[in-house]
Figure 1 (cartoon, rainbow, N blue to C red):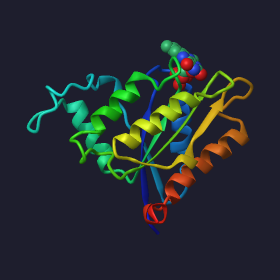
Figure 2 (spheres, rainbow, N blue to C red):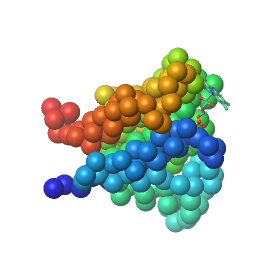
Figure 3 (cartoon, rainbow, N blue to C red):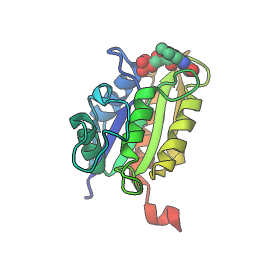
Length: 183
Ligand SMILES: Cc1cc2nc3c(=O)[nH]c(=O)nc-3n(C[C@H](O)[C@H](O)[C@H](O)COP(=O)(O)O)c2cc1C
């Protein structure tokens, strides 16, 4: 059986982050044949700066991020929305992953996004921005993965319907076939 690894970028740094907890639930309930790894330390990755992104030496935290994403089969962002956009920590990670131009760790990597916010819209602007940005960075966006879940009236960490929707999102990302999509 093929084994699929998914690297997860969490867009919130706070300790009690609902999105971080969602990512942990997905990791702990990953289906057979799938490993989900949450990339830690995104808050330590410096703001992207071309001056420090040199061929010979880049910050260790950025190098680690690139290696972890490069070695994964899929990438999933799990993120809230800040002021109608994706949080800066996620945007910064995508910037680091977009370089070297044309050969960044995201290039050709199937990418999806899910997340929850306590509004009726569930973070959909942030999610739309994340897929647009990842696509420009070279990722192969799997639009059908997207779940923008409102956390207004449900406990997204325990609600069975929400959990099923998120589990399905992981399945869609795992099952995504580049050749079929390109045909
Ligand atoms: C700076 C800031 C801006 C926010 N802007 C939005 C927003 O535009 N849309 C939205 O749905 N929620 C917004 N929120 C609410 C967050 O979605 C909410 O705090 C969410 O729980 C954060 O995710 P987390 O629990 O994973 O940290 C904002 C929160 C902060 C702190």
